[in-house]
Amino acid sequence: MRVKRTINFSRKETYYDFIMRLIYYFDYYYLDINTLYEDEDIKNHFSFIFKKTCSDFEKEGLFFYNNNKLFDYLFGYFYANLYVPYDPNQKYDIKLIRKFWNSIFDIKNQRNDELIIILTELYEIFDISLNTSSVLVGEIY
Image (cartoon, rainbow, N blue to C red; front, side, top):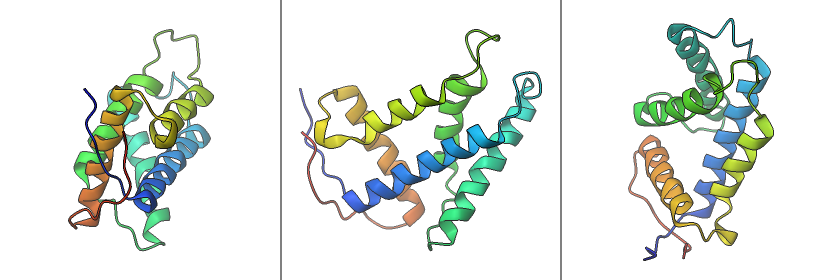
């Protein structure tokens, strides 16, 4: 059964831009699996790129620094999919990661209920940063 949801498209684009910037910084500042092997080093690296991304958005008047749910959600994803590869001899595939997030945010063509659920959960987590009740516009089917 499909659940009808509504999304503010300008917010969705902002949240998409945040994720893409975070991925860019991950790729740009990634050292190597031998350097980012310990959990503490991984967390420090992610904290650095998260703060750097937040700083970029702060210049636009958007403050994501103190959104612990957002940090935890994205850290969990990055940890499982980028920092800890299934094959230590194989580097992460940044194109595959971008494709995954593009598919989540491409709601016009979205027919996968699981991806819609991910988008709405993430949207709600990002909205915490705005400290406002959501003014929702548009529809996802």
